Length: 251
Image (cartoon, rainbow, N blue to C red):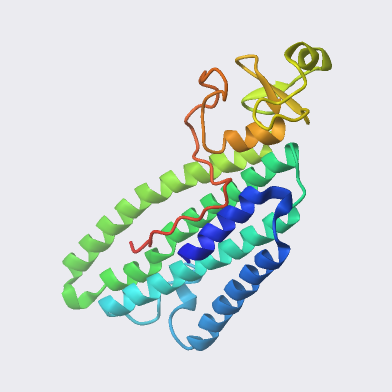
């Protein structure tokens, strides 16, 4: 999983030089693995939490952990397979398409984080709602868990909505497209790639760069590459580099 995450990030950074064979290979391996795991455990309770349905029987603690970890891993692999498809689709993207690629990758990741936050809920709901512990205790623990889970899910929903709004935003939120006069006065060479500008973007600090270059820059930075003026507010973390969160969502 870690190795695949690194490969995806490298392929994202390669842009037009991405190797389709590698992306197709990762996609096939992940999808076959996901299908194989759920086929192998087809008589188990793995399927129910995928649709937010509690398991039929109260799971023992370690079995609950097993179900959650398997579903969490499979969800991440399915999302990484989807990211492979996006990288293949945007292989030759420049400027606006590169920015849209980053927005799509970010939206996929925040959708995944929201779904993964919800995945353990039906399992732990069934586990805590165990009358063997006593009605009062089971009701109390279930209520506490759902309360804390609601707080976590609300944060994930806000991030998801912000990523969705960023995707629907057509304008460049860190500047505007420069006119030919502005480009001529500033010089037609991009300070980042040292080549003739393609789809030049005028930042709020009045510096101009290729949209492709500056979009990639703002995937990891918040300031202008030249004057270090703050351009992009610290609102939503971008996953435009193709990375996937690798921590387990156990609760």
